[in-house]
Length: 218
Ligand code: AMP
Image (cartoon, rainbow, N blue to C red; front, top):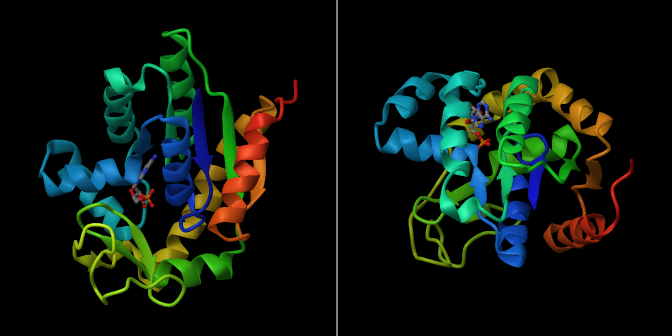
């Protein structure tokens, strides 16, 4: 089973992909996390991606595609995976379909989490992440028990440089301009499922599970 989580930055793709990944025992492949790790490790892809990520712009397709194709060819993806943050352009979607097709596989569902822009800005500008295990927190909505420390692993919490308000607004504009065609692409294939992403974490997770049980439209 190959599932794609789509949605603007802050829509909850990472959180929901994590839940699904645990329930379905499939790897969670987050392109943003892979890029941030590549940057920390100072790899060629990481260094070439850095300036785009800082500005909240999309990293060139050739970098993200190389990275994702390498990832999906690993053994743990044999039964499928949950994509989070990829594809973000029509070209990425087409290359992914071709690469999966060569292995006799396909995308089963694309889940689009819909959240109003103002809510996204609130979520992202208050978001803090664990530097060690990436668990997300929110300064108001879901603060950690000890300020600045992860409840799960005691790692240090930080704010992503691209979660500052002006960059967030730019990232939302990028989503509208470049990722909207990806929604149309999966809609035309009858694979797009729209989910209200403003129902709380558990509410959204329930909606996703029931959508995955429903048959796809032809
Ligand atoms: P995310 O963690 O998904 O919000 O991604 C953080 C940043 O990584 C984005 O603002 C982009 O600069 C870059 N990025 C992540 N995934 C992609 C992708 N599929 N295509 C291009 N850039 C990406």
